[in-house]
Image 1: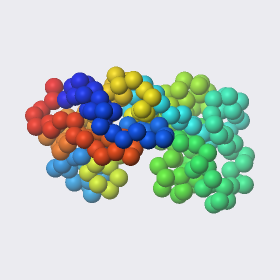
Image 2: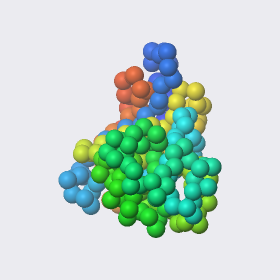
Image 3: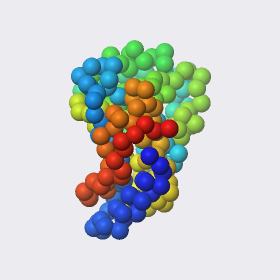
Image 4: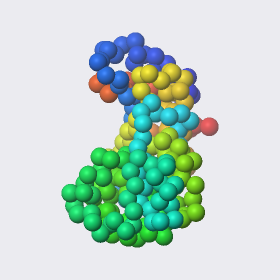
Length: 223
């Protein structure tokens, strides 16, 4: 798979898609095969930082104690202090789902974050995850972490052998979107057993309201 394949597919989508009154998102869809995702060892859950921002603001929230409270208020869209955890009932916790797209947590209070917010935020895929670099020490500089998370996508097989990720919007340059798509493809390939492209059934790209088109049918080992 080459970046040029993604670039050609993006151009085709722009040329053939119906114009909408809103800015559509470009998604990459990678369908897998010969994996038993009922087995934990063959499921995929990883986070990868894209070369470019996705064209939409990613709101980062934070669960912190006093050590990071000032830095969090400067860098994050939503801040929840440890001292306020006890005031959060189910309705307030559900409201957090709309106030940020991804959350970070101060490492030494992570057990309390998990016990207080884990049930609801976990179901929505918004719990702070160390795989994403979202569980941080009390001495962390938050601004660079937030900047990196703005570019980070979650890649996961959610009950099926398929992964979908948003990688850009119509206002972005084709080259930027292609770079982001290639980064997702590469990250997944490297996570497959033996980095085997034979586990990839097909690679598709689509716009929000459009039909997916196939990028290329991969039938050989990638190098």
